[in-house]
Amino acid sequence: MQQPMPIVKQASVMVIGGAEDKVHGRQILTTFFQRSGGTEATIGIIPCASREPAIIGDRYRTIFADMGTKQIEVLDIRDRSEGDDARWLERLAHCTGIFLTGGDQLRLCSLMADTNLMHTIRVHAQLGKIALAGTSAGAAVMGEKMIAGGGSGESPSRALVDLSDGLGIIPEILVDQHFHNRNRMARLMSAVAACPDRLGIGIDEDTCALFEADGTFQVIGKGTITIVDPQMLAHTNYTEVEPNAPLSIHNLQVHVLCPGDRFNFRDRTLITS
Amino acid sequence: MQQPMPIVKQASVMVIGGAEDKVHGRQILTTFFQRSGGTEATIGIIPCASREPAIIGDRYRTIFADMGTKQIEVLDIRDRSEGDDARWLERLAHCTGIFLTGGDQLRLCSLMADTNLMHTIRVHAQLGKIALAGTSAGAAVMGEKMIAGGGSGESPSRALVDLSDGLGIIPEILVDQHFHNRNRMARLMSAVAACPDRLGIGIDEDTCALFEADGTFQVIGKGTITIVDPQMLAHTNYTEVEPNAPLSIHNLQVHVLCPGDRFNFRDRTLITS
Image 1: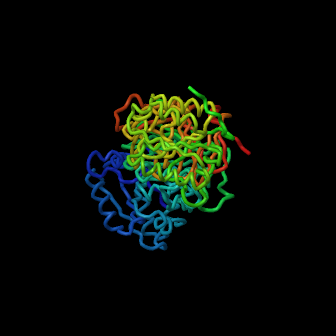
Image 2 (image 1 turned 45 degrees about the vertical axis):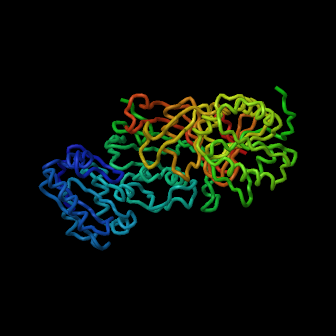
Image 3 (image 1 turned 180 degrees about the vertical axis):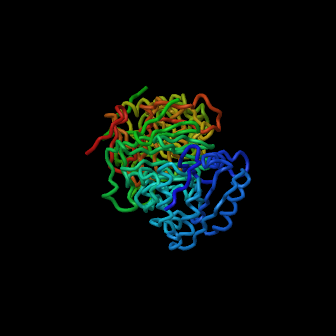
């Protein structure tokens, strides 16, 4: 396969909590545009999470065109078999930035998981050849494990969260989005009890975890990012109880990060400036 | 002042997350009845948090009478000056259990704080001469600092929580109630950032922290209790930022406890059975 000539200034994976500003300062989307190479970028938009892919694809196309992107591809894949299609792989080869829109994370995974297209995106993102961003459903899929759905307004329990497989861009993280906006702390803690080898990351709306190649991420945007780290987990009854039973989860480390804060997600330490 | 003859079997303070079962198993209320001395108890009901104190007072009177309590007093104080009234102090002297109902915690504090009645209740509870229980607003007042109100569905911020002074029964705790039911994790974390010398305790509905004289509490009821411990707090921007700005709160220890779990709130350790 032909390799793209990377013109990305600084490789990064951007995990966005949904509802990012599309009208005013557009801080998060502008950062993605810049990380993709600015006016020299070729941006690929993947609207597959949405049930209205043409509409949402056009919406982002307009935004990135407004910023000055000359080359924009909407990879509007409607059938799983298209993910191995040479036509899409060729277009992908020219992309310096890929943007995964919101919608339904299960829909996105069912169309994209284990396709050549997704494999290429993952490798290019991990090698820093492209900037990759995902918002809402497009953020949920970033880990190897994914929160597919769940509830709020109840005690933490196994039934409060539905887990499935994500796209594994950053395997070790377990992402939740629209985080405090939709009151998802109880479901993220429940998810982390199920997957204590992962790092829970709850991202508020219009807020982004900007992952760099050095194993750190920085918070940008308007809200907070909540880290739920089960590294020191002392006990959970997760595997022993009925789905609706209240959970016991002992010794989580929790950090609330505001814009400007940085976190090393490999050694799980805060970087104070 | 004449001291009551304590017939309490095992002194305790019960902090209840609201909406405790009043109809079926009544586990929490039955525990309070037993801790107050069972059929030999004299139970005092303080309905001052409520705007309908006569109705709520009668409701609990009926429940405790059904259980077999022979002596029940409703201390329906409508004016702050009554809190120093010899008539109420005399009735209190005979009580072996005191129950604080729900309603508005600011109303309860404005009627009861710094009265002789409240002083006597606090001393008797701390000496283990009475069993003391509070539900919802009656739970919120247990600490020296109190969450008076706040919001949910937003990033943690100073504006997300209103703090004031509680009744200081267990000074070191900062209680939130209806906890996961009303999605209050963001407000409790915000409160703990403001009061890092306290221990945040979020109690779900129909769930109770049963504090014993040995510095431990046990979880009883149906839901979870969430401990937010800022003992190891590494950094917060709480004192530096605007009220609506997102907070940075680094290094909280969080435990989700289910019924049966025990926690030592003095040395902040979990007790595994």
